[in-house]
Amino acid sequence: MTTSPWEPVSARTASRRRGAVLERAILDAALDQLGTVGWNGLTMEGVAAAAQTGKAAVYRRWPSKEDLVADALRSGLPAFDTAPDLGSVREDLLALCRRARDAMFSRPGLALRSVIHECDTVQAERFHAVIMDGVVEPTLTLLREVIERGIERNEVRSDAANGCVFDAVPAMMMYRSKVCGCEWSDLEIETMIDQLMVPLLRPHGA
Image (cartoon, rainbow, N blue to C red):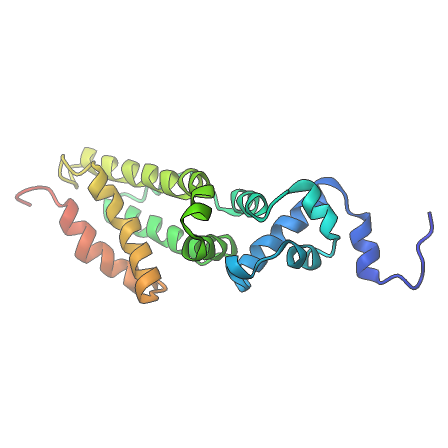
C-alpha cells in the first residue's frame, strides 16, 4: 500500500500506530488535556486530535469520557509501593511527603486534581475506586508502615497507629493545596512534619 505524498506527515504517522502504541498515545493525550483544559473542557474529539488519531479510534476503546479518564488515571498514577526507611520517623515522613507532593504536581496528579475539583457528585462516584485504590489506600499503607516502625524504635507513642493519625498528613496536604493554593515546598513540608506530626507522634512523657 502506498501513501499519498499529499497526506500530512502527522496523519501518516498516526495511521501506522496500532494496538498498545495507539492506546498509550490516547491515554497520554487524555492526561494532558485534563491538566490543561480540565475535566469540563475535555472532549473525546479534543483527545483524538491531541493523539493525532480519529475520533472513532477513541470511541472503539472507550465508549464514554468517564471510561477514558478512569483508564488514563489508572495507567498514569505513580506506584506507591515502598515506604522510606531512613532511620527515623521524621526523615521517613519527610521523604514520603515529598514523594506525595511530587505526585500531586505531576501530569497524572494534575489530571486527578481536575477530576476531584470539577466533577459533580455522580461523576465523582465513577472515579471513587480509582482514587481509593491508586492514591488513598497506598498512601495510608505506607504511613502505617512508617509509624509502626517508629513505634518499634520507641520514637512514636504506642497508640499512634490509628486512622486519625494516618489521615493527618494527606488531609493537611489536600486541604492546603486545594483551599490555600499551597505548592508544598520542602520548607513547608518540614514545617508541617516538625510542628504537626512530630509532636503528635511523640511518646507520652517524652
